[in-house]
Structure formats: structure tokens, C-alpha cells
Length: 296
Ligand code: A3P
Image 1 (spheres, rainbow, N blue to C red):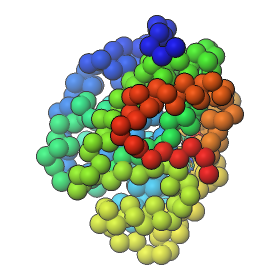
Image 2 (image 1 turned 45 degrees about the horizontal axis):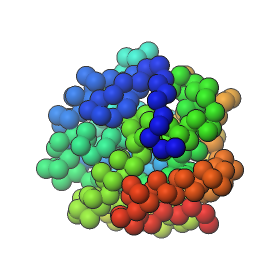
Image 3 (image 1 turned 45 degrees about the vertical axis):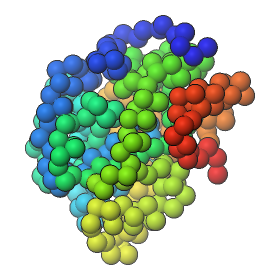
Image 4 (image 1 turned 180 degrees about the horizontal axis):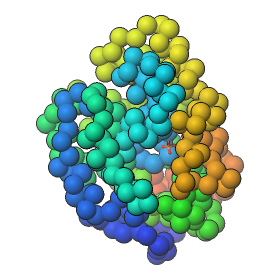
């Protein structure tokens, strides 16, 4: 039953009512609010597992004229920093990596709107919000929880994780709150909302639309190169994007680029869980009529 979950994992903390893990400590979350945004920044706003890494690679290439050479030499993590992330082992902070990255920057954040940098509202920066149907997000996050030591290599069952997700008890907080917080910004002139399923359906079209939104003119060759480079198969075998040497992810439990499909939730959700999910979604966000795609 939604709302009845009390499980607490090691390393969790609550910041302004939102659940985080140690990799986003309070002092970093405080500093994020006053982060110096540049007018030519591009922010990627996603809930975890929406396809963030995919969009990071696509947008970095669009902003860098399809420069495959640098993309093939440097981890996406360094080219497109994760703003609120602190690597407690390497002592790297996303905020600081971002401050050192040359413009135009492509910056990733999973924060809900009220915790994001205040200057996002005043600067001419661009914001790309990526949504994915929440059932696939939930499944993808479950496997990430299992494989990532940042979440303590979750040992619980799928059923337990399902409860955690629908009660908002997952890292970076409730998917429902995150989604509602950004949905209301979607018509702002500096904001573009896109969907994972649309990228899956026609990546060429997504790349062209994103380039237009970002004011970049790309040749047909550039677009083709980006689409090929960012295919699931290519990113999965590309050490600059597959995160396989990120020490905190155990790819033998589950790789970051796991399936990359639409509708894998059907292999995990029971019929009853799917009905509960639909009900909770309707209660919480039904009034927004967000057009999610659950299958092709
Ligand atoms: P699955 O677990 O469903 O496979 P994030 O980067 O936000 O953590 O999201 C990870 C999800 O995006 C994973 O979903 C991963 O496979 C998917 N993904 C990453 N790159 C992709 C690509 N090039 N094409 C399709 N899906 C991709």
C-alpha cells in the first residue's frame, strides 16, 4: 500500500524534505543553490534513469559541433559534470568540475526545481528536461540500486523497491514530485521538454530539434555522426560513455546501459503492481495529463 513504507538504507539523508544519498551531501546541495550559471549553459534536467547519460552525450556533441575526437578521449562524466555530485573517494565535486569546464557547458542535474540553482530563472541559459515513462524508470532504477555501491548495492527484492518508488523513497526523492516540479516550466522560452521514447523512435529527429532549440547549425554529416555515435550498441561498448570503469557501479550485477528499451517494465511489474502504479500516478499527477508512452 502506498505510503506505508518505512525502510531506511545506509547513507540516506533527507535535505529539505527530499531523500538523498551521501554522494549529494547537504553542504553541496546548499552550494548548488548559489551556483554561477552562465548565459550559454545548457542544463540537462532528469530524474535518475530517464536516459540522462544518453542525452549528455547527444547534447555535448551538438554543442561541440559533433567533435567525435574529444568525445572518444574523455569520459562524459568530465565533459558534462553532474552538478550535485560529490565523489567521496576521489573527492571530486560536480560543482567544481563544472566551474572549470569551458563554455558552452552541458551540466547534468537530477534536482527538483526548488533545489536547482536560483540563477536558472534569471540567466539566458537553456534547460532541456528529459522525461521517460515512470514504469521503465522504476525498473531501471531498481537495477541501478542493485549495481551501485552509492546505494549500498541494494539487496532488497523488486517488490520492496516498487514500494520505495511509489512512496517517493528513492534517491533524489519522489519521481512524482520531481516530475511535477519541472512540468510547469515546460513552456518557458529557454526550456525544452523531450521524452526518452521519442529519442528511441527517431534519434535523428530529436538531434535536429535539439540543435535548433540550442541555436546550433549542424551539417547532415554531423547529425548522422551523432546518431551513430549515440546508438545504444555504440554507447554500451564505448568506455567513455558506458561507465564500466566507474568503481561504484558493478557491471556484473547490472551495467548502466542495461537494455535501453521501451516496455521492459512488463517483465518486472505484476498486473497488480501495474494497476497500483496507474492509480497512484492518476491520484498524484493525473491532472497534468503528461503524455507518457509505455510501449511501442
Ligand atoms: P535501462 O536500465 O532501461 O536499460 P541514466 O543515464 O539516466 O542513468 O539512464 C540509464 C538508462 O538509459 C538505462 O536504461 C540505459 O540503458 C538507457 N540508455 C543509456 N544510453 C542509451 C542509448 N544510447 N539508447 C537507449 N537507451 C540508453
